[in-house]
Length: 287
Ligand code: KIV
Image (cartoon, rainbow, N blue to C red; front, side, top):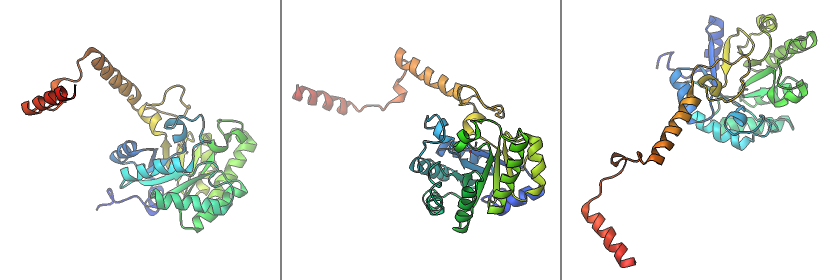
């Protein structure tokens, strides 16, 4: 196995940062999206709790349950071999105590095969959770800036670090998450100039989303390949039109069913004459 095909480890991610090599991360939520990420050679796959919206149809990340996330995470794990798999722990699954956070993180590691979990926020309680989970042996990715699980407390789904007070809080949060033991940090929706101020003080890889240049980037799978309907966040770039292609495919199928063009003889199984005869005589016997 050469370095290109060897499974990505935390050491490899650190080496990539040191070498100035960009870390590519994308979300995945099921076997096919994990296979697509793996085939594309991405370094990290995030089973994001954005699954709540893009896969399960909830209006925010808040309602998704641990059981729902575990099912998705296990499917992603089955679809990946080389990529490093990080799972979001959903809202409510770590908030009660450090013990609850450790129990949840262990479930993602043992039942879903996660390489690491991602915990949002940097309050005193969140930092305590990061320390506890790391001490239990599960690597943690931090997430600062816009933290969707608690967006209500941040004034909604809006960019952070745009006022002096908010930028200072962002710097404190990023450093605190590193200090608590996270091996990498996702920074969401913070101006690039503000992120640039703190980056030299961060030894851990910074994975940006709407945060300008960083050690790597993450985007939501459905946004990347063009499945998402409606308004996209300003930081999204779309590289495909899978949503349109999918709708077109289903529409073509529906049209052929309605017109009788599908199924054609080649879409079935040839019958043996004795089978048709037996079916006829059984029908006669029964009617
Ligand atoms: O859940 C998610 O998809 C995320 C990314 C936006 C970083 O946390």
